[in-house]
Length: 314
Image (cartoon, rainbow, N blue to C red; front, side, top):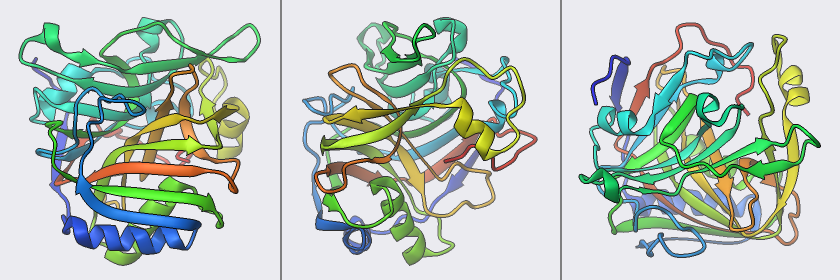
């Protein structure tokens, strides 16, 4: 599949997994009561609870930041629609695993929605495993709904961790009982940023909220009036408290090497139909996290918006 989208491929700093594991453990211990971070053989992530589209997170690991929040805010750009198969080609991983967070295909779903990308491409496209989930706000009563939709399309933006999807060594990060103010995701990113400073370290994969509840949002229909500040965005979004077990997929980066990146972005799904954009847990005394991550070798900045801002990037 040919593409005319502009692509920047930037090498990232790639420290040893063992070094990263020590850094993450120290960071998590500042924010959680019980912490364990190890380098392990990746478990079969196609199995419950994770149910990824491929077994592992190894082989040519890389991140993709596609489009961006400026395509949504202040007003949505309806022309910004993308295809995961196209992304796999641009990432030089035509048969890769792509997992992460993005906006669902409003032009397919008929409404603005959230996407938890989870797809493994195969040479025979009939064998491609697409476990991607989409979530929308019910316009009747503002409850949340999982869409009955299987699509490789998405809109506006995405933040993806991508690899060959093979078994191998990964970082396992377990954290229980939050004692500090940072979310699990932000705690991991901040630990990397504090240790590696201006060296950009990218990391992605999946984590499970095994116990407790979390605050998630789902985007409603596109705003008809410009969203000009974070307060506008906060009033527009629809927030929900959702219950474990919840699976989150996405990526984070410790330092932006002048690419106008979203620094962290994870979206969630579950067997019980709950999902959306992860913010933080709401039950710190009982929450339990278990994550599996790999370190990215490259960042692919795809179709970077020409005009940008920092609104709505939480």
